Amino acid sequence: MQKTTDPTPTAAEPGWCDWHEGPSGTAVLIQAIEQSSGPGITRFACAPCREQRGLIPYGEQR
Ligand SMILES: [Zn+2]
Image (cartoon, rainbow, N blue to C red; front, top):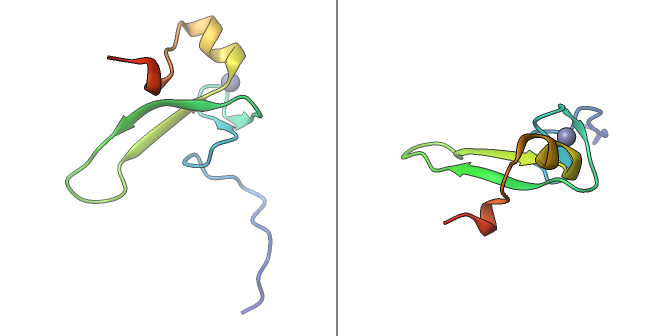
């Protein structure tokens, strides 16, 4: 099998904003939901989306 570049970024990758559903250089982790099985759910948001929606980066949440 030949390695090809996947044109579709995955949501779990930093650099992707789940709020406007597009690539972003400013995306940070907002939410990480741990599941008993599976990889869990992670959501990333870029700076403009965080500002618009009042999202708090995961690392700054209590
Ligand atoms: Zn965004």
